[in-house]
Amino acid sequence: MKGAIILLLFLLSFNLSYAQEKEREKEEQKKKSKNIKVVPYISYNRTYEFMFGAVPMLMYKVNKKDTISPESISGLMGIYTTNKTWFAIAFSKLYLMEDHWRITIGAGLGTANSQFLSGGTSSSFIDYQTGADFFKLEVQRKIGEDLYFGANYMYTKFNNEFAFETPVNEEVTLNGLGLVFLRDKRDNVYYPTKGSELNLDYTGYLGFMGNDDESSKIELQYNHFFKAKRGKDVIAVRGYGGFGLGNVPFNNLLVVEGTDLRGYSMGEYRGKQLVALQGEYRYNFKGNMGLVGFAGLGSVYGSEVETNSGKILPSVGMGYRYTVFPKNKMNIGIDVAAGRDDWGVYFRIGEAF
Image 1: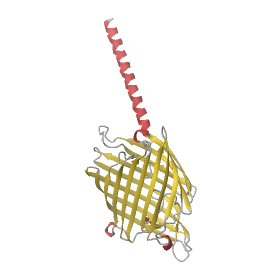
Image 2: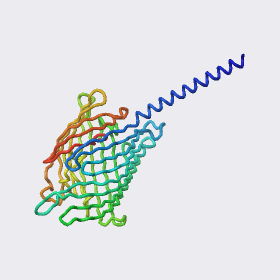
Image 3: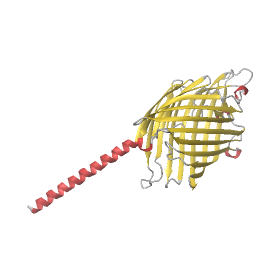
Image 4: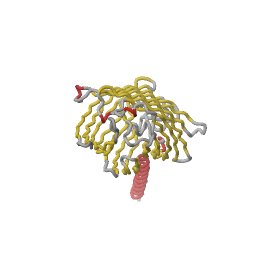
């Protein structure tokens, strides 16, 4: 009898332990599901037309014992458009060893059907198709309080087909090696509410690396963030300067679009240099939703179209935000913006800056 009781107690203990283990597994699974999201991608602009796709993303701690590093993010992006453009991208932004190391990795391939404004006596839009694949690696090391220094490598291969009266095909391979300096005083890398970020990036495309023409690019970015009176809202301002030097190939020219001046989608304004200034108000509702309103000015220089060099380009628009990772205030959203005789709709992962 005693043996039967001991056996019964053992079985009950085992079942209880098993049930507790299953409950822990369920809780872990719930936590994991909160960190994995599959976001639908829907957008439109006048060049690529309607765009559809999906973006699975994962936020995680590389080392769970590291309480200082922000969570890392990895994801995939697959997009197809009604003008038969497509691309697939894999990306990761890693924060390691109590935020002493930051690593960015990206790779992708695709085909874009786009256009550009040609120079000459009678400027006109020229259609072109670009098949491209790329790889990027950037490593930054903390060298002081809020200061990072690092290096990057960028490989891109383009196959261009230009629809001139006599079609022109060309293949361009770019290998870029650069240095980056970052001063990061933001309170959150995914949704800053105060602080600033200064980024100086130099990339050289030199002959010994297999480039047909030597060129380089210098980019200076400064973002500043202020808490607004409501406490939950944010005012963000950004200044950007990009400067191409040497024989900059067509695919590496700076184009007014996307991040630094929304509202331009036709590839009309491109040149060796680009400067832009913009401001944004980020309004947060209760819960996971918000709105943004933004405006900016910019100019390109060194354009093949002389009348475009130095022209003041305004931008104004608004957008919707939804928080997909509440713990990190990581947002996705859609922006609608108007520029000079142009407009665009932009799907966004994170903020514009």
